[in-house]
Length: 498
Image 1: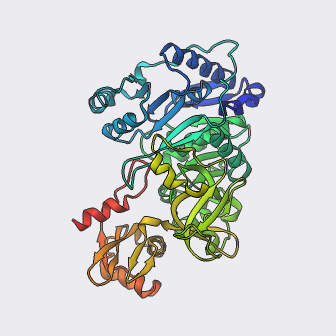
Image 2: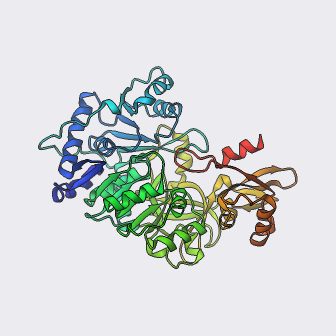
Image 3: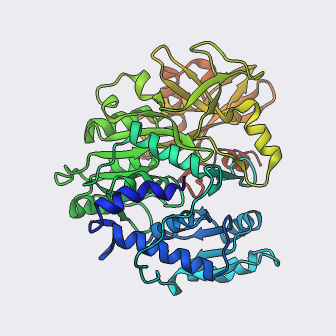
């Protein structure tokens, strides 16, 4: 089944309703289907054959949804990359994926062309010089593909080395979309869904269940995330759902001015990184039961566990710090270093299997074998199940601080320090220690200019076990983040150690 076939019912029922809008431009569902079909003809004229890769190095814009869905409709493979990546990083991905076509912005073309391998063979197209083709009348159905044919290659953010291409098949993407509708958020035909996060990432995945239900998808094209601008758009366009935000964006929403004109908003889907307890508690108290958490990763997108909106309001700490409940159609186990299951409450690596799990890493058999050994996706995340059946993500496995032979999870420290009223952002990490092996350090972005190391350590003494208290505190104007908004813990550590 081609994942595009999920849109067939909406195209029939909602033919004259808006599928995608951007500013004053829009495509109805009929026009969207006809445009995707016409793009398929254009791809063929560009000598793209089934299975060829098309790389999208683009910011959010009107053309993006049609390009993305047309690629999969035609039996090609989408390789969306974040527009915030440096052209040299994109050139490395292009060298690995070997795309036939690359779409990019005009200001990136020269540097990208210079960085691409000499024998890359791809035609590079400036999106500013490209126009969506005239919609095709009486379009043919989507190309028939095998469920295990690749449809999307998602390159990991590369925080542990070079990015790896998680190959998502049509089966994977369909399963993800169905599970989203079953558990995370029930998109409806009258929803107006705002995409503020990059369509190259989670927000692009959410296009599919949203379009399958006949909703209108509004593309937010402004650079940066400005909460007041986002809420202006929500009020003006009567937005009912925001498809995917990162925890850092929720913190920004809390800093915005109170609004009385956003009552239309019934859902904000968030994930991509752990959120601190105080932040999500404050957000739920201020905005109500509209936050829907997902836990997943590129290798199993938006699909491992979820915490619905109703579970956020009035919830105890154990619920809010958890990643919620295992999703429908997904099997999760917590395994030890010998890949044996551990008891409830004990920590180990979170391992997943099911139709949502990637086929493997693109042209990387060694990494695929390691990640999928024993038939389970080894996520690299440390977690446990609590007595309430909730999955708790403790930290990335490689981020664990081992001090004096004791495991210390940075998130435990970060959750405590984030509750300090003078702290805006915090990241914890280990630094080499001649006596203990590693000692705890934290980097702080403070809102209160009077906050100093002595004051912070005094707060930690009152709220943290002695062995978890930081021995070093670094005050910074901002924390280093990658193109997806994740804090670069290892890069920060390396900078401070050198």
